[in-house]
Image (cartoon, rainbow, N blue to C red; front, top):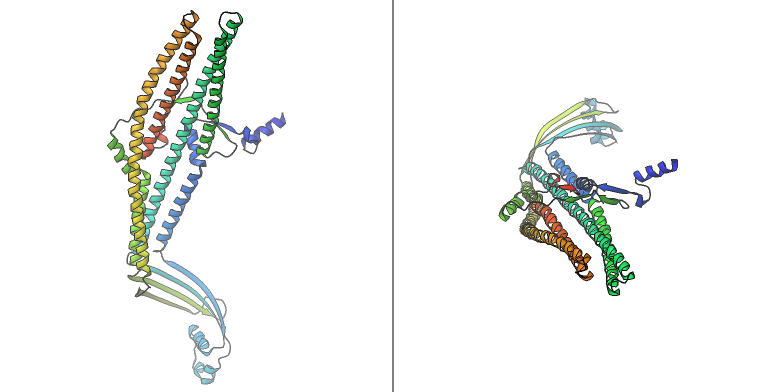
Length: 453
């Protein structure tokens, strides 16, 4: 018993055998897991952190800077000796005797300095740098939001894919069960001499074909599980299962295509990110050009001089520094030109993104309507195919239909159910695709699920 609990706890913390690590997820649980574990989330968070740090650096450029230092000097230089006496405020008439000036001996001086500098005008360079940092943070936030939307869309599509694969496997199992009944019945009837051998062989071949379809469906389920685990960022060895549920049939888009295109251009986080990046580049260009303007800084300094480390003989200085670059080898201008080219690059990306949005929104919108029509047709076909199977089965039991007619009717039902399933999957996935293309996809807008009836 003790070994059992030890093995159980090892499996829970994830260091046990890979096959033991299996979890069941609802759609929302799968999305939350992905938003925490998918590697793209870590990349987006790192970019947000970089942008925050760059923003702090830009703001720090306009803050006062304080420094403290201590230096100790030993010298026999006459100038250093006289300077030391002056700094200690200990100059006497004897210090100006030629022999003392020429041969002062060894001088020892410790200097403690406390300095403060504060740029109060930089031609706008600091302010523009702060603005660039703020826009950079917005771009990183929007990029992270778009990354989360991509993750959500990928998980939902993979989750729906697994649900559809499981539904297809259930259809295949039902087909195998029906084929098994027919194979058993025909075998008994042939043994009794009531049917010909070809009917029994036909039923046997039909059973084998349906078993092969079931094997393919089971393989599709395993592939769908792997796709979902990959989309979620699940660790290796974790086998992902989903709760027993099916997608509710989503509603058709209620607005015009133009409405969804406008929504995408306004709300898509990647559009907002590129616009913010463009504003950031513009601010950096202005900051680069401001480097050649007049700069004004305030400065203050306090110093203490002594032969031993001590705060004695204080002297202070307060002033302002006005500076202007007269020639820097055109570095400021070239830097601004480089940033201008990057602005052109961002503008090109923005134009390309808008074209891609047109395609993505229109494709999702049109495909969803087409899938809805396909689903309605397939749903009606399933109802007709079910009635046909019932009628042919009754006629077969009465001896008024051959086995081949019944098998064909059941095969038609399987195909109709598969077509209905495929249309529902396309309908549901493009419903999420439209929300993703418009930039409105979030945890709140996840598609609803219901338990099997």
